[in-house]
Length: 347
Image 1 (cartoon, rainbow, N blue to C red):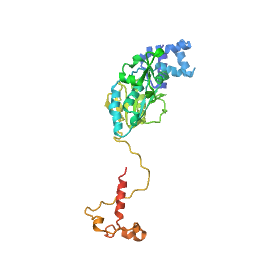
Image 2: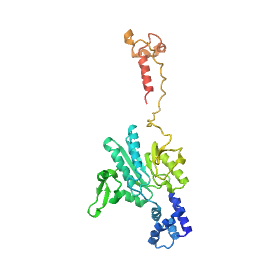
Image 3: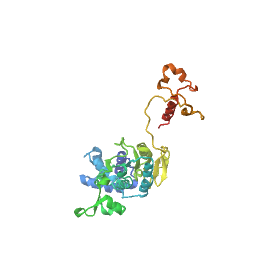
Image 4: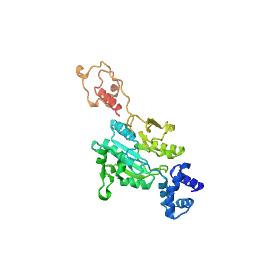
């Protein structure tokens, strides 16, 4: 691969995905794209790039992207993040009275991460307790996304899954499937898989998320792309939401938006500490509160004051009703004031 060919490939990949390949990735790009050259019988990378750009065939652009994306992942990778989800995020939701959790795994790769999240939610947000939990699992690479949706893995990939969870949430293959494991329906039903390019606008998403996992992704973007992406994540998060990044990713330069909690966990800064209340419906202005009752005002029954009928506030007696200091005022005036105070404190 010539230097100018590598420069053109780097630029096209950046334009399409936001991924910024370093100069040291030339050999990697050469080896990964070589199979596509062989597939088409081409003898130069520049000729292959022209086919991709020309859409010949239309699917080759995605093959180009699939070749150059990195998909390192494991079950329970960086386990402290799942501990934080279990020990902090879920208890906070429970304490607030909420049992609805929406989580976005924005770089799901071959699926180990979203299935780990699904196991965590099944263990600590059981549907039997009324929890409504859902996970959106996305990736730009269609080949790894198809692998994730199948949910079938080699048994030796399961070494980091606790044995009890492995037995509870996976099926073991037999016969021709020996040495394989498959995710049970209890995990699959929590997950929705979708291809999403993080730099494309708009995202095909309408939900607000309580948690976004985007680990070991932003390190492949330059600062401008990182800023745009993280700002869009903030708009997609609940005001009390959490963002999880990879162990080598630091966004201290965006401290006005995300507050660091340690171990590359971030919380939306400035969000309310209590659940948001439902907005009130517009209506007429409420009457101002009446002054408090005099401390030594005699009780009606003890003085034997005469009750008046409900018609005592008719138009003919308006002047008398406007003078609450009179001993002959209607006894109905005070219960009505009490109702006004009660309504003013609602909500």
